[in-house]
Every structure is written in C-alpha cells, then in structure tokens.
Image 1 (cartoon, rainbow, N blue to C red):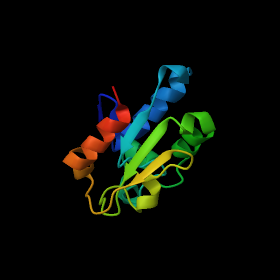
Image 2 (tube, rainbow, N blue to C red):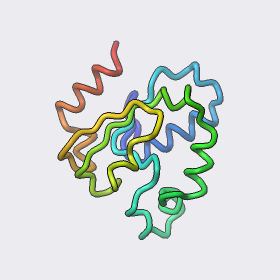
Image 3 (cartoon, rainbow, N blue to C red):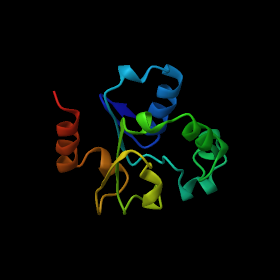
Image 4 (spheres, one colour):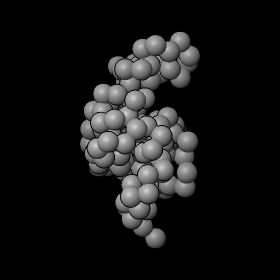
Length: 128
C-alpha cells in the first residue's frame, strides 16, 4: 500500500519495481518504506502465492530487482523497520543496504503505518 509519499509492506517492493520500470529516477525525490520486505521475509517460506514466492529470502525476483539498483537509486529510499514486526522478519530484511535506515523498536507490522510519532517523523522527512 502506498500513501502519498510512503509505502507500507509490499508497497515498498512495488515502489522499487515501479522505479526500475520508470527508468528516470530524477522524477523521484524520496521513497519512504515502512516494514517492507526488501530482502524478503522468513514468513514467505510458508506461502505458495506468486507474491509470496517473490518475497522469499534470496528469491530470484528480489535478486533481479536489487541488481537493477545502483547506489544512487538506493539513496532515494528511506526504510523504517521494527524488531517486533511479525510479518517482515528478521528485522534486518526490512533494512535495505545503501538506503537511509531507521530502526523503530517495539512496533508490530501494521502499527508501522499508523503510529503517530512515526508518522510525524515520516512527514518531517517528506518535507513541504
């Protein structure tokens, strides 16, 4: 789900895939992701759906996506993640190397999209 300038969960992967297809990253100032499985999630090992298979740790889809991103593209991303996310775990899988990373302790997966102090910090990062 992408809301304005921030993406929750799989929305972060969708934004990265869109950016790959868009080609011209100059149109993007920042992509903020909240609890996105950038490096997959252990939970996807139980899935049989197409998107679940894509979110498996080390999946071919995630590897292909990562190979299209240079340091400049990664620098456009800001990843917010938690040690209590019960969907995207371990927590390190939501922290994309080369991106701006923000650890938020104690928040479950859905709360990452609605926690008032976190939303304030994200809106500050988005700016005017």
